[in-house]
Picture 1 (spheres, one colour):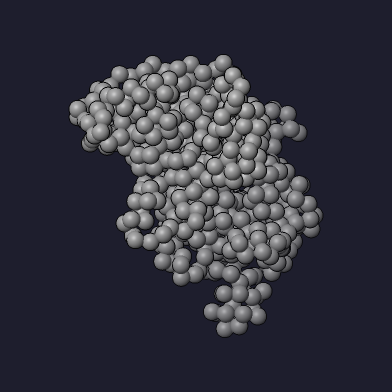
Picture 2 (cartoon, rainbow, N blue to C red):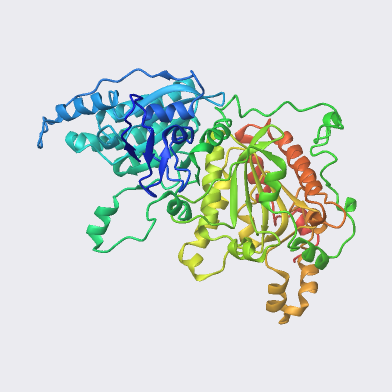
Length: 582
């Protein structure tokens, strides 16, 4: 934004001009809009003080102690001595360095916040910034409260030479300590964030959100264009570009930042906000059955005889019904404060897998699931009909690792014909991505409840189903191959799919008899597609009951019993052996 001179004595400009659309905006209106252009939505830069004032609760900010560092380690002079440039920046900004660190609250949730100021030598990363970011991380560690990093930087501070480079390792090491301690780190990327900051603490957070239009990258666009001798595409390195390529979790307008951050911070430090809500001992109110002693309670069917009679092919058709609730439908009905997170932090954001944290009956959980797209054909095509790419499984793995760090139970909802079988998926390492998930889930030290809500297709489903409790909805199916594929291979006739479905024992009752699933979630009469709200309530009751049982278990017991559960499949004495070979 370009300030237009104000003839009055008021220090605030009467009018400002948007640099993007050149619209003149009344100054007070511009301030009320948090310096966002009401016409084109361009987000003007904020100072560190303005940023903290916007994000933190009123009067909650308490500055952290300043850390003194070497002033001019190289005795550097270009056209002017470095100490002169440093003094000018301090005088112009009123700051001692390019970052301002405070302890405060956001929507009542405690946080340590470090906000960078681009006015101070381009927000460059030098010894002073490295020391302050490290001190903010150590304060977060000492108080065991989340860390918020607000980044704005042109890169490393050249005037401090290789010592500025070392700040990348120093700050990354500080964030690694927070990982080891299980403390949430959130990064808010603002425009611009480049170089050493982008390649260290800005992108090492558990959750990375960006303002609209914010640019982030290791090399700036001019450097890239000079190197490759070609022009870059429009929007390159912007927040929207980064979201499409799986590098940030979300693009959040400035007006929504406080609410978004409040939701994330509500996950809280281990041992406080992650504790479950008290469980009622009223058998009617407690989904686990209260004092009855039943491991799952009446909301989970544990005997095939309790299920309505249905044939396998009918189950296949109901499991594939396009109007069955999706993972996002269940999230909307069941989770308070659900925040979808995006991307594998490598190359893509596969839309066939969705996930993020939220609260189920007051208990923080990490929800991850396949997303087919519902009854909208265009949306189903965009979601690849729920068939994930390697990036989808890598996104799921990233969210599971985040859940393990924060001590959150993992809930997975499975509804996929299988993994994406295309050539791009194979080039991207589909088999490796699935295998990595199987290994990761085998050793994840938090409770895992998996529910097959529709189709459980082969390894693409199993990649989200290595769990302590595996449930299936009454009209769900789970199979090594689709009935059509089995019929085409073994019967040499795809029309024999109903016969293959029966032989494969894909329906809930047979899966329960085989011991593949631990229980069945009831559905509304006619199927989950007939009443999404009731279907969600039944699913929520079942998942809550399973979590109530698992939550008291220590990590070692979780891992031991989870491994035993899968180890026994196929051995003598396993229920799956009773009917002979499939």
